[in-house]
Length: 527
Ligand code: TNX
Image (cartoon, rainbow, N blue to C red; front, side, top):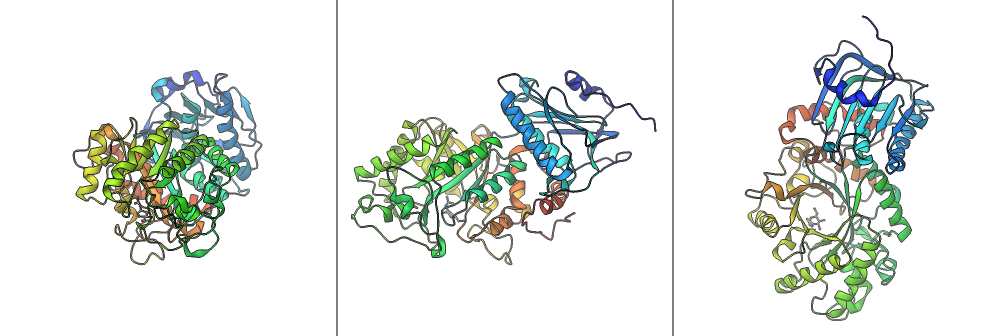
């Protein structure tokens, strides 16, 4: 076979090259070299470049091409890539300005949008092109999946570090692609949250919703109401010590997420799910008596006192301090399962609480029940139904008043549901959720007569009543979370269980390299 001399990458010609090179569809057998990797989420389009294999070498560099406004952020993306590959390859992989062996450029067409990117791998170079640093980051997550799984390990590995030649052009289906972590029922440390951010961002999720306050614990510092954390955060389910994030801790989580282009959406659940707050301040209770801390797993027994003024000065302070710590534009006020709040009180409460979130400059997000009340412009309702008529109605009511809907159907997207009867932890109130069940639905058509334009995206909640450590959390999230991520990113016409299942199988070795405690679902031929 005739070999071409390696060329220097020339970014300006990339778009032309994408079109001009002889192409082969992804998955078809290449002449030689590494197999075409199994990407999740599936990109909008991918072609293989037969006979072209890229090999990362000790002399390889990572180049950044970006205007002065975007240079710092683009360099950060390059630094993260280089740091990970340095760890496993042992190569220096110097990051520099201008073209490199791997080039990251933000000079792509604006038609790529905020998150889209193009990627080209040929025998001599790798180029990722986007219109923003965020787009570069998404492209780099694809590049990481193109490399051998061992490139994601924590320690030095042996090469070769090869990638099958390919061109990819990719952008997301939905703008909202979230993962929720319940840190109230069981507390998760900053390091554990960072780990979850790392794993979620690998699959292009862009929202981290933190469920920060519930009956069992208040987990975020509020200076004006200090007992919320010192007392209300002291325990967790089962009565073991809880914990909370100081302002510095929370800032660290927000920064870490932002470096991986995930917005943090803090949730303070109201008016139900509030026992931790009610236990901390007697005045918040209608009868003025503070209940004891709660370490069980029941829901629906607590409520803020809707008729008391102090309820709203409390929430004003809480939402102000939480909003101050949130660079993202959304704050979640809960609103679910308020079974101990009289319905007329609920209808009074939600608009007042929503008004306070809006007053502090944030869009309101809440569970589907909030759709029954008038909401400020730009609000988001989170569907958690199980195909029941009432939940579907609420989703349509949200859309009818101009709100967006994020789809978290409990019988499909709840990562705390057991996979099957033998799953050692988790719940089953919404049903058993197999890997296939979690994947096989369409966010835009799940609720009949919900206009497609109202659907902002998807989110996979991980409730932690039964998950007292991060190993258990990973076991429930993997392999289902990447499936939800694909529903959020990939085009509807590309969603196909048979082909997904095969791509999913290829993630097993990557999770082994990353030491993810995933459920080896027997229906997947893990490799
Ligand atoms: C329902 S769904 C809840 C949570 C529980 C979860 C357990 C929703 C908005 N609320 O309080 O943790 O089920 O699966």
